[in-house]
Image 1 (cartoon, rainbow, N blue to C red):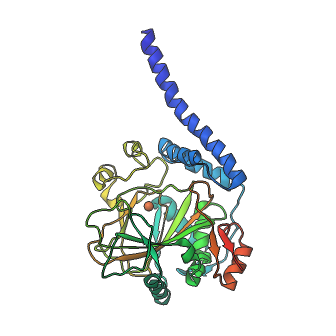
Image 2 (cartoon, rainbow, N blue to C red):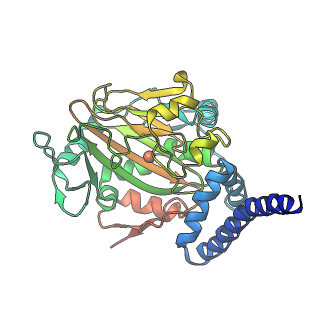
Image 3 (cartoon, rainbow, N blue to C red):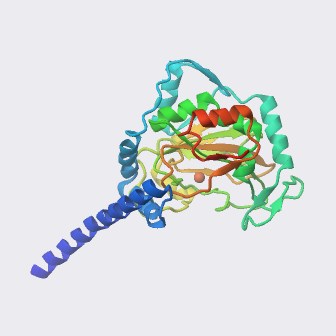
Amino acid sequence: MKTTLYKIKQKVIARLKGPVDKINAFNQAYAVFQKTGETPKQGYEALLELYCLTNGKFNDTMNTKLISSNPPKKINATLEGVIGKIDDVKFKNINNTLNKDGYIGFDKKASPELVSRLYDYALKTYTKVAPLYDTKVIYDSLKPISEIYRFDPVDLVNNKDIQGLIMDPVLINIARNYLGCEPIFDFPAMWWSTTFLKEASEEAAQLYHFDLDRIKWLKIFIYLSDVTPENGPHRLIKGSHIAGAKPRSLLNRGYARIPDADIMKYHKPEDVVVVLGEAGSMFAEDTKCWHKGTPLKKGHRLVLEFEYTSSMFGTNYPKFELQNASEEFRNFCVDNPIYAANFILKN
Ligand SMILES: [Fe+2]
């Protein structure tokens, strides 16, 4: 009897000790991050494990703590940007929907002129292809050599149209409201998805997963080509970003890619959002939601994505050197040092 009780006690202690060790590892890494701006590897690992252990509650608690030292600017005016004029009421509705669903599709699309300039830019700019990303190629739609072609974020931030979008006051305010603080522009990403592989690609994130580069973040996507059911619509499970919403048995797999059948054992079909849209369609998502790109049956898909965050704790990315900043963008970076912390202005 004594042995059994001892074993139970040891098990309970081990269960409690695990999270305590991880919280200690996180706290130590956070102290290093505050001094150096770099996240030690064990700190990032602790963040991932604590997310899974607490079903997201750890991230929410940490975000509440860290935003207290970076309060958001109060914006009461109507702002105008790529998705049109947005007043206070609309901003509140957008934020409520994001909090509830983790996703919102915007009514207004980016202008055809802007989409066409960015599409042309993508056809002429070097990319790197999966799986090795070691050589630079220009995408040729007639002869795809990979399922995914990724653009260099440094090239992207030196594009003046992308600089314009980075400065977009409406997008920034959506991120501000959602993160609860002055947002930091984390990174831009742009990529072509193709029909090169005939099955779901892990590399192209075509299996359900959640992102976890940061403590809290928001992504904004712009489709730069028409996206139909055939050419790889983004899919997500509405509401699965909320702390406590992910099934324990799936979280126990850790930071893993999950087959559709397993996701659908736990989530309702009506919560699956398939994001279709013509070129220029835009949406925002907290990619803590389960999400994936669908494998393409034909054509290709070009997407531009921005990430906004409340803290750079997490994955270490190099800062972006700007050789080709517009005068307006330079001034903007000087006026918004928190938001523009990842840009290094040259000349
Ligand atoms: Fe993802």
